[in-house]
Image (cartoon, rainbow, N blue to C red):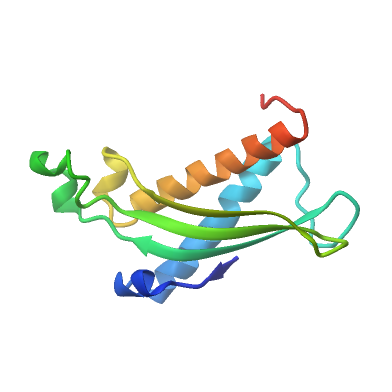
Length: 143
């Protein structure tokens, strides 16, 4: 898990300690969702093991006043969000087996009432979608 902000990401001027906190949150959410699907999280390479390289490239803080203003509902103004890039690498061969690029805004509601709630919501959705996609590739149905 890395933080590699694009110029756009740097323009949002998010405090480095908050970025570190969000990186830890991302790692925790991915491990939680993969564990729910029965995947073992390991630190060593081995057969059937993927290395996930993930970088947060943007964290967009919510503008709370706009999140509760009725006039901003149609435009999406004020919604926070996040962007990330990921590579899924066969841990033995080093071959990239998949890559992803995501950028999403949060949703209206209580998550937008804190500066980084929408970013956390987006990260939760990514982690869940990752586990669902892994299950699909393995012919599993998530319980």
